[in-house]
Image (cartoon, rainbow, N blue to C red; front, side):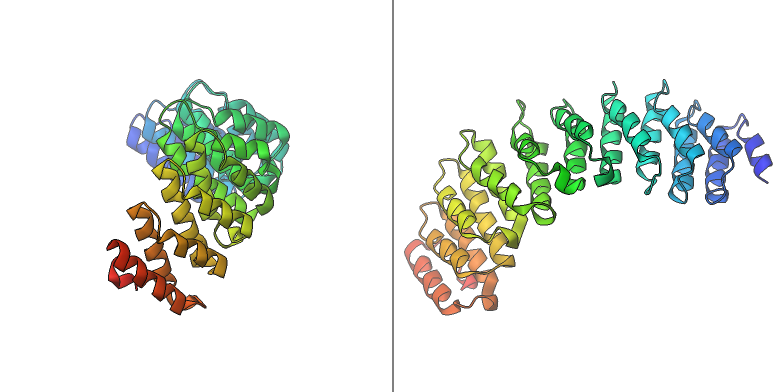
Length: 336
């Protein structure tokens, strides 16, 4: 049957070649022979995009169940193909292979591909390095990913930041954190959405003290966009950020001249409260009930209302909420 399928890969009908590639992936995922891998490699360069995609999926399927040297060699060669779609598919497949024995060889080739002329390939390579994770966390790879954080395409920057996050402790350095916080010359909206999440996950699963120290320092930066992202990232860290230095810094950030920073600081306190309802966090939010910004008062009231029975000082919270309601008429009574 395999011989017949291999022969059918030369069929003039695009849909036939597409289905044949798919069938080869399903039937040979556990015991793929070199002739099958070679044929699928050639199919990666098919004139029809659906055939190329089907061949790529087949190689992924084969690789997931056994990243043999033959499969790896084919995919590494495909990273130099003249068609960017083929290079992209090869990178995708390498990222799905899990435990790769020839990790150093694969990482070295992916490192070169991180500077590919096509942004979709660079994006795919970043994702592949992220899936390989800590095993790919060499100083050269981390340096290359730092450069990718300045790529003109936000998708590439996004994949690079994700990759750094997945590399764990080795990538949790002041240099990496500063690079993630550093704003771009454009509006960088996607980066502002992505960075706090990445730094938050780094802080939760890696060297928390390193991340928190860098973020606290960032709260004093002149650029308000850095302060904005830093305050949000502290909230994403959650309960591990429930220490005096963080609470104090966020409380000070409530007085920032930019409303984005003030809002993120209050929201960060709210998120920390949900994970670690300590008296110090509660006190900071109680103070925020007297803030001059009505949106901050409301956000603080919502946070204190949501913590409810978790709080050991529910009577104090209720009293302060009532007082704030009477004074400002901004915090809905349902949060009491």
